Amino acid sequence: MVVISIAVSVVAITFVVLAFFAIPAFIEARRTAVAAREFLSRTDMELQPALKDLRLLIDDLKLMAADAAEKTGEVQLFMEALGDTGRNLRIINSVVGAVAGALSTSSLWLTGAKVAGKFIMDRVTKKGGK
Image (cartoon, rainbow, N blue to C red):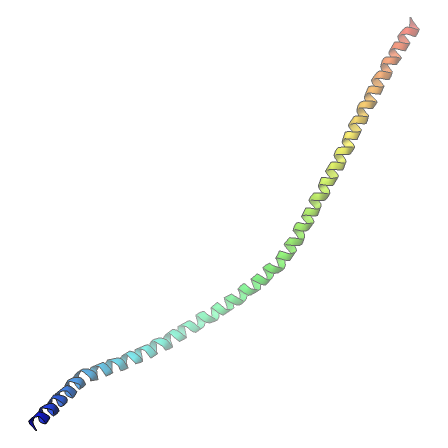
C-alpha cells in the first residue's frame, strides 16, 4: 500500500508540475492565436487595395499589349510598303542610269559627228578657197 501511495503522490506531483508549466503555455498559445488572427485580418485589409490596384494595372497592361499587337501588324505593312518603295527606287535608278548612259553615248557620237563634220567642212572650204 505504501507503494501505491508513493505512486499516487508522484502522479499528483507530476500533474501539479504539468499544470504549473502547461497553463502558461496554453495562455501563451491563446495570445499567439489572437495575435495571428489580428495580423491576418490587418494584412488582408492592407492587401485588398493593393490587389485591386494590381488587377487594374494588369488590365491596363493587357490593353497596352493588345494595342501593341495591332500596331505590330501596321508596322509590318509599313515595312512591306517601304521595301516595295526601295525596290521601285532601285528599278528607277537602274532605268535612269541606262538612259543616262545611252544619252551620254549618243551625245558622244553626236559630238564626234559634229566635230568630224566641222573638220571636213573646214578642209573642204580651205581646198575650195585655194
